[in-house]
Each structure stands twice: as C-alpha cells, then as structure tokens.
Length: 91
Image: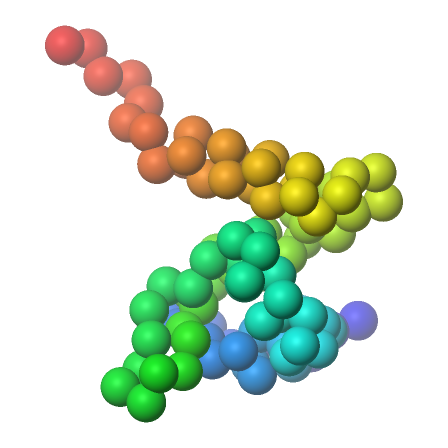
C-alpha cells in the first residue's frame, strides 16, 4: 500500500512517486508520454502536479493490463477532455 498523501494542492515529481508507489523515472516517462500532465513548473523548472494526478495513476493501473501506453494516453486524454467540457448548458 502506498503511503497516505497529505492534502495539498501541488506535488513535485518525487512526491508523486512516493505517494503513488511509482519510481521517479516512471512518473517522468508517463509525463513525457502525456499520460500524466504537469500542472505547472517551479521557478527552478521542477514539474508540479495537482491532486488529479493520483486519479490518473489509478486509472492507468486499471487500463495497463489490457492496453498499451499509447492507447492509455489516448483514453486518458479523451476522458480529460470530457471532464473539461461544460455540462448541462441550455443555450
């Protein structure tokens, strides 16, 4: 079981790795593939991730046994787009 993560808004790559049980290299790899989008960067250039990254990691773990990383990136990208679209608009 992964350590319990504190309630906070942004996490550095090492914190994401620690709380998710992934290695820093794996988090970096998934970021470069577009599976884990970074939220912003520090002034020093360190990647920052919001709490949604942990939901994406869980979803990735669900999909990984049956999908390639490319397929997972596409699925998660589509799901993120759907989350961002306005719902229930009556124009």
